[in-house]
Image (tube, rainbow, N blue to C red; front, side, top):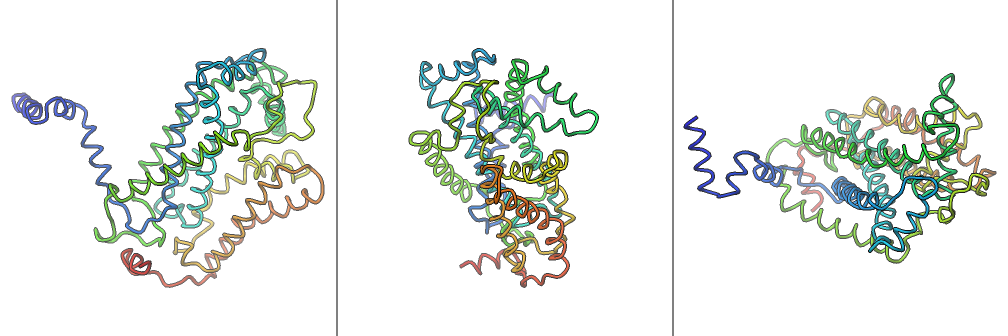
Length: 410
């Protein structure tokens, strides 16, 4: 006890109040540890998307909490409460547009982060858990975004909720019961809006918890790198601060420039005009579409004539990501050293953008046929192309050490 008292006294005398806090809650030493954390010295800007996603999430939570203070989750008042936020609340228009545009940019950053992971083999041993937790984060993001889209209670909010929730009715035996449970009744009404508001508020905090697990799993084996070569000595790494913190700050600035360029000059560009019409169950929009970040999966759903198979296909398109560590068995991680893989990957990327475009088109030819071919290639890439490339592709010679890749870059 005397020794402990002496340590406390010495810490307080040395650093004052900071020493008193540090002894009881070692937050400053933790921050110092993060700053000195060693990372591969050949990371490029593609590795900034993870930290950008964190900033986007924090921005969404802050603006969302402020909006929740003024929003009324009732079918008779929701639409007007949003209009009141825009017109009467001090800087309400800025907060609402930042939240709406921020959601789109959040998905752009996360899609780029996923594509980087697919190209550089971030799902391979021993980082499988980093990849798996990331997929759960994406699922939570999609659920949060869908429920948030319903809250303004515009035409597309109401009909989007009606169409998407009815997809669960395709599940044999229990499907209709699930739909009624989601609705809280026999149609999309006030109980539905209340449930979606509560879950939309809760899920971002669950995403934060998942993001923490994501970072913990990442720190277990360290970050990957563009070469895919593992760290072999301290010469292969540099401290996170100041080198990569500065790079992160640059991308943070660019992110905010793009965000507020949309907020101030084109705030509704990424939204749908029908959502500025109050929800009317008696009037069906000509063309019901979800937000743009759901469109690739929506295109897959619509391309299948059978409802149940379409729903299974849509969910399988994300579930297949869990199988990547076993589908792609190539010992070379990075696509930079796999010439044939690189070609098929970029075809896959273009195909994914094509699916997004097709999801926003009307359900007619030739869009239906194109959606089917794009969906076929999407699954062919994972189920056939990657396993075959793992077996037959001859990759380029890998550098002996990570430091050699830096020398090559110079």
